[in-house]
Image (cartoon, rainbow, N blue to C red):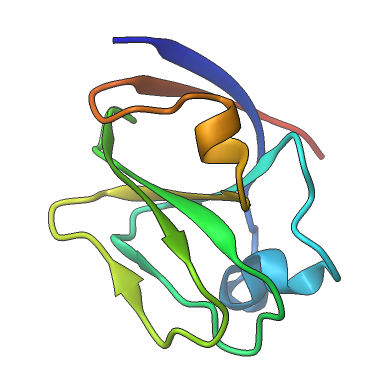
Length: 107
């Protein structure tokens, strides 16, 4: 098990939660969008693929997957938090099931 320290942003409003990484023309490399208290995200209207990390309540990795543009709902039963990353970052950072994510919020 590895502990990944990842720079994240947390959407502060419902509108920001609904947009997620869609607010960016490309998924930003090197940091992620963290969604607490949910087991699902969507890629509706997104123009790019993203990596999705489903986490337990204590941010242990339950599943890592790639989500293509236009998917209505992507979820993982039992997840309590979700991390969206640029496509390839999950693999580049070698994020594995059982690892732990330590989020560090940026403004």
